[in-house]
Length: 274
Image 1 (tube, rainbow, N blue to C red):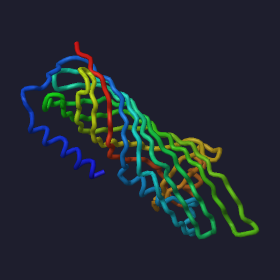
Image 2 (image 1 turned 45 degrees about the vertical axis):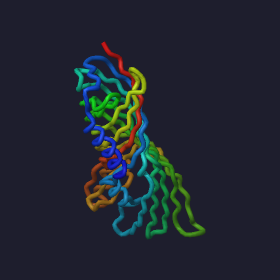
Image 3 (image 1 turned 30 degrees about the horizontal axis):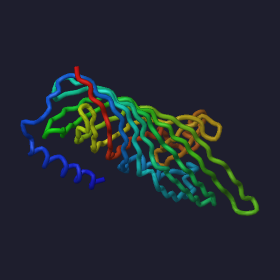
Image 4 (image 1 turned 180 degrees about the vertical axis):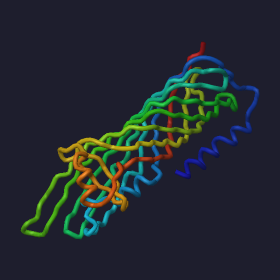
C-alpha cells in the first residue's frame, strides 16, 4: 500500500504547481456519488490477540496457533455532500467494508486440532468534511476527514477434532457475532471532470474501526470472545464466565477490535449547482 501513497503523491504535487486562472469556482450546490475501493489492512492488536487463541483456558495445556489471511479489504460506498462555498463541503457517507477470509488453526498438547474460518464485514455511516482546491482546468484536489458509527458482523465456520483413535471426536464450530462502535476516515483524492457536472475520482484513504466487544451465538450458546489475564483468547458462554473466572483464577475482558486499512478508491459523482 506504500506504493499507492507514492503514486498519489506523484499525481498531486506536479498538478498542484500547474495551478492557473482557468479553474472553476463552484460555490453552492449538491454532490452525490458512488465509490469502490480495495486496500490492505494494517495488522494490529486485534491480530495479535487472535494469535493467542485457545480452545481451553487450562494453563497446563500447550496451544500452538497460526493465523493467515484477512489482510485484503473491499470497500463499497455511496455519498452525499453539500457545497458550503467554493472550497468546503460537508455530507454523509454510507458503506460496507469486506475483509478477506481470516484463517485460524490451533493444535493443542492434549491432541485437539481446531480450524476456523472467519468472515468479517462492517457497515458504516459517517459525517464527512472535505476541503477542495481547483488546480488546473478540469482537475481538483480534495482532502477530507470523517467520523461516525460502524457495525461489524463476524461469522465463523470450522471444526475441531480431538483425542486419539479409536476415541476420536469431531465437533462443528459455528458462530455469528456482532459488535458496534466508531469509525474514522482520512483521505486525499484527485477529481477529474468528465462532463459538465460529472466527475471521476481516484484517492487514497485510511479507514479505521474501533469496536469494544463482540457477542452473539456460538455453537448454540450466547457467547463472546474473552481475553484472560494471561493474554490467551477464547470463546466463553456469557452465562458461565463467572465459573471460568473462579476455576482459572483469572479475570476476563471481552475481545475488542481496533483495526485500520489503507484503501485505494475510485469514485464517480455528479455535481448539481444552485
